[in-house]
Length: 381
Image 1 (spheres, rainbow, N blue to C red):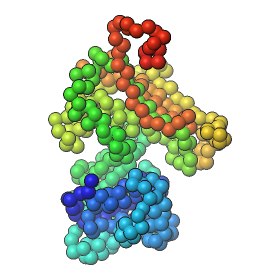
Image 2: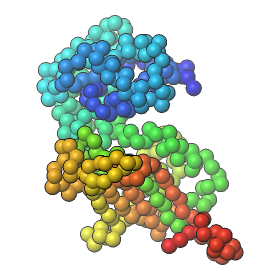
Image 3: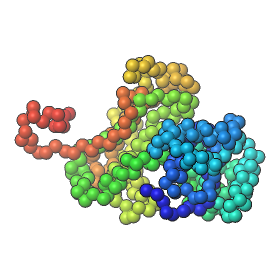
Image 4: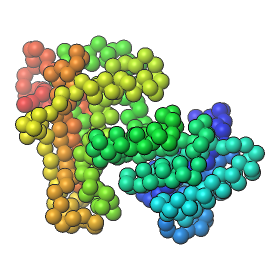
């Protein structure tokens, strides 16, 4: 599918441009948008970071990521030559307000070259502690004064608890209008995740039985064979609960449990998800012992290779008590789902990498088939 709609000239400024997120997710996504005709003819991708790189070196780094992670496979040289002309790099310390003046000059140069005022997207692919610093420096440098032309994209985790999330929201609201702020959960960009809504709300057969009368329980499992790799310093302050359950997996739960929105409008879909979160049963301190499990992987073997335990990983505290596995039982106390448990689990260094949502329907009231004929598909306790 190729777009016939041309977007306005756009400048992407990616903070953390040399990081893993840009290489694995952002650069491949932008390249695929380019291949499919969704990017405007006039666009610029400006990566930032403290590592000294030339534009060409930065482009080569992105090329490695695109070849490895793009859904369209390795690049076509002709297309890459055309795409890479739009890639630039700027050495920048996010804490140094003076470096933001260079961004302003680049934006002005592009506007003059294109003879228009371009949209500017600031993508914060950095550690969460840099979010407030970057936002404040953008304000000080007057890089977001035009609310119709500037946007800021914030990756998860959005704060480390409720109070810090409210504080970050308050800060962003003092700098940007709400329509300028994009709080991104990149997991929702997966095609199979997006298909959940179509699976549910474009299917008249499923809707009548998608409730507590027919469904016994729901399981949402996202497991990874990999360990924390070189993200030990981040992961040790987050753990499986903050890294996966409170964002990715709760989003999946909301997609499974939400009521039908009246339209595909972003605010309408968000409101229906919020309804699910409001209906979720709160935990008492005693409930935690019976409804949640945490664990941490130790050293062992995976596919014939010896792998280290979590506490032996790079940048991890050797006495860390951070969980790498978590499982929680949730209840959504509304008319549709009352009494139906939602089992959510995630972990690293599991036996396989998979993302599975299991809808377990209730047994028929009377099984006419002999046990030995149906043991492979009959529900067991």
